[in-house]
Length: 166
Image (cartoon, rainbow, N blue to C red; front, side, top):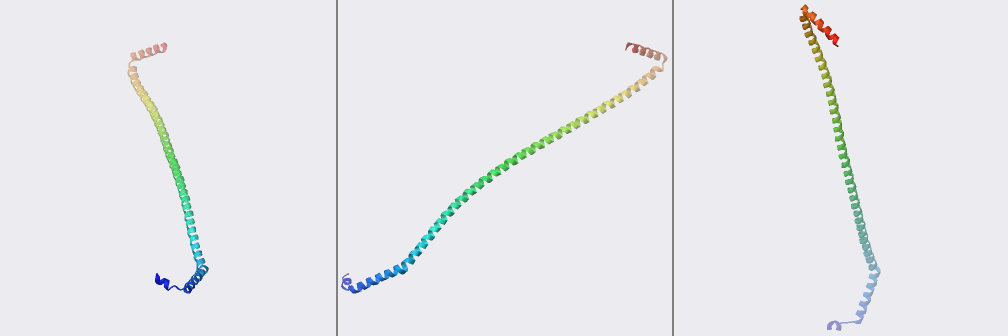
């Protein structure tokens, strides 16, 4: 340090001080403003990016809320459609059961009517057969009874007695 103080020259000191001041003034005039402008531009860009990010974050939140709302609406619509489908299925089953029951009842009624007509036809045929057999039996009896004269007189008398009683 002694050496530094010994070699000190006031003229050189002032000259270096003036050069330093001129350099600072030149820096302020030509370099400081562009540096501050660049810093301000960068700061504005960063702030815009932050604002854009915040805006994007809000939009994402809105989109998420919209998506949730749409999902809820879709689920509700799906539930409604499923309920309608279940109701339609139950109605179709009930309608099919009613139709099948009506068809079964109609078939039973037709069968009963057919049975009744067959029964009447069978009874009529049975009556005709019985009548035919009765006529044949009566004819044979009458032939056998009318072949004998005493039996004929006895038959006529019994018929006359029966006719008077009625």
